Amino acid sequence: MAVGIGDVVAGSAFLVSLYALYLTHLKGADITLSTENGEAMIDELEENDFVTDIPTRLRGNISFFLLNQGNRTGAIKFIDLKFQPDKNVAEFCKEPILLLKSAQLAQNPLSLKNPLLIKDGDADAVDLEYVLDLNPIVKKRYKDGLDKVDIENDSLMLVINDLADYKKAELNKLIDILKYNTKLGEITILCEHTKKRISKTIFKKGTISLNLVHSFRDTFQYYEDALQKFKLEPEPEEIIEIIKGELSTLNDLIGKCYNTIENRISKNHDNLMLPPNVKIIESYLYNENLCLLKKCKNYKNIIEKDIEAVIRDIKENDEKSQYISILPNGSAKQKLIKELKDNREPLRLKVIKASSTIEELIKMLEGELRAFSN
Image (tube, rainbow, N blue to C red):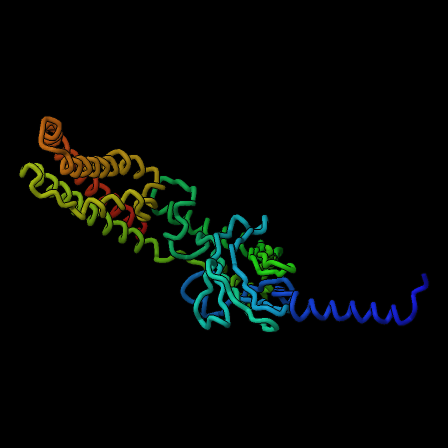
């Protein structure tokens, strides 16, 4: 049976009307995501950023667009933001801060849990702000990144000099890495957006991948200038004075902690409040100044053997004292009270020894200063 021109025209008209029906009524929400060039750019640093220290915080932002080409209001949910550092710069990169902001939500950060609604034929711009922190070891302040530095020497003054050399070498290494690697990593945005399929609305997974890159020019010159002028801050003599002050404070805290626990044991634990000094003194186990002092072979064994040991004993004694407060009256409670009272004299002697050790350390540090000034 021959097909006439009229049949073809009618068929074409039917297909056109069917497609028009789809576009106007059946298509539903159709959200597309786009970026300008698939790159997230790091801003140039300013010269003023280098006045007080070596900056290690890199920032930038990028906008990408959400367009609803459908005929129904749609929704998009941002599920996760991920960052994968480039292998060449991974050793200097820390986990970045990633923050989405929507023009629709003004200045309020866009929650990853709440969907963003986009009307049919409408669009929205979403800003991604990113902050990438680099390893702080390159900073001039002696405390930054100290726990990662593997140095050891016979005197604190030599340790401080080695630390300055190490930081300067790491800064030089960072500059070289940035010069030859413009790509710092990749940011991945995982999302779900509505998609209409004839009779039902589904959520379709989507991904936006952005290369995090820099195009430093002036920044390199600022880094190079900072490298040439690099000098550890504060001055070595001031660092030693700071550590002396920390040791004196620690000595006072050890005595106060012991007295608090001593009074509590003597009163059979009528006062079971946690002495705040115990938590403060415990922080000295991770104190940056003692960390620096322990990198000196002449101080390391003394600190670990006497000072840190008595800190742990005071902490353990206090934990037992607190445990007594939840024990019911009876033989177990009385046994623990007796144990603490029996340990009171050994602990007192350890506190006296630790105090003497701290005073000895302070004198040794004063000797370091005298040797340096000669």
